[in-house]
Amino acid sequence: MSLSSSPAARVFRADGPVPARDGLLRIGTRGSRLAIAQTTTVAETVAAATGCEVALVTITTHGDVSRESLAQLGGTGVFVSALREALMAGECDLAVHSLKDLPTGPCAGIATGAIPQRADARDALCARDGLTLAQLPAGANVGTGSPRRAAQLLAARPDISVHDLRGNVDTRLGRVSADLDAVVLAAAGLDRSGLAAAITERFDLATVPTAPGQGALGIECRDTDRGRDPYAAAFAALDDPETHACAVAERSLLSALEAGCAAPVGAAAALHDGVLTLSATVYRLDGGAQLTVEQSSGWTLGDAQTPFALGAAAARELLDRGAAALAPLGSAR
Image 1 (cartoon, one colour):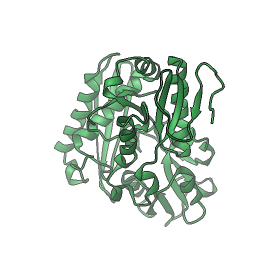
Image 2: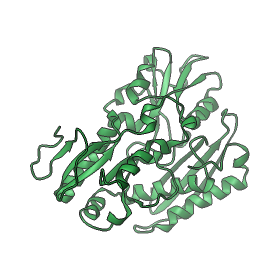
Image 3: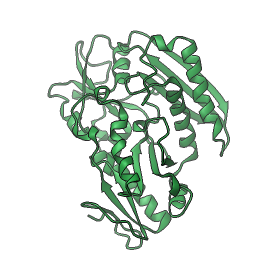
Image 4: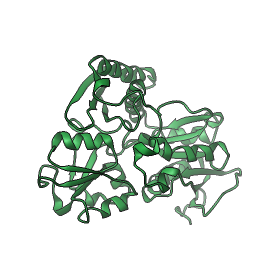
């Protein structure tokens, strides 16, 4: 299936395995509507920057077929491992991930080549009858697969009932007005899937910080390929330095906290007038308590160390102030 009409840089979706050849880059992707949409955008940029044909190769992950909760599955890494295995096995040349799904620890043989410009990082409420969170009736049933989102919902509305939610975006939205009054999803995913009309409220990052890296993508390759063309040309076209710095700060925080998917941690980094600011919050799982810190530092283009240091400093302050007593930290994956 061709996704691009340009004969010089054709983008197409492969029906099965695709052998490697000169002039072709194969991008591994999950098969969901959202994954295909965001990978197609990446593929079009890669094709334009390199002149290579680009094939989208669908990889099925355990997280795509299991109905267990994210915590039971063992973390967001269940969406990543199959793509990484395909990359190392030579079944694809690049892999596109939602950055919030990527474990913060290093992976032998794998490198992150680029973090493109971020989409809307906010969480979004999709409710029946156009309702906002404040307008939902007492005892309303709200779905989310995220312990962080559950804690934030209960902090704002302790009277509602939060239910575990799995499945793709369409499946989750299909439960609204069926057995749920509302669901909470990433605004970026809804926007990229053409489903923004389902959103009834976008939460403010200042009061509802999201998962580190939410709204951003991570493009991975084999470590041996990162510095050579056509990969280097692709990464130069894809990478957004400001998004990269903000995402690294948020993910450095998560790494320093040793926080996995079961830890309700929200983070939001932003750059203004050369100052990188990171706000981070750790929640008690029942939403009954939370702890927020904010750290800032000057940042200039090419500065790779400050984002790491900023995230680590925010994590130290959170731990010094008792974050480990609020949330299950020390469970990074």
